[in-house]
Length: 65
Image: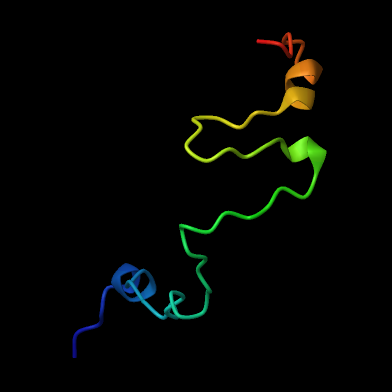
């Protein structure tokens, strides 16, 4: 009787991962959440970056830019 290679037995790939796509609720991509804090900045549709005046001041950037 032949013995199995120990490394093949120990490191054999095992896939027992549950499917998580049904466990997580996904938000629709079209809905935007309202801003709850002034520190979060303003969200303007179709704008390429978040306008956050307080964060710009904190980083030393002129807020009028």
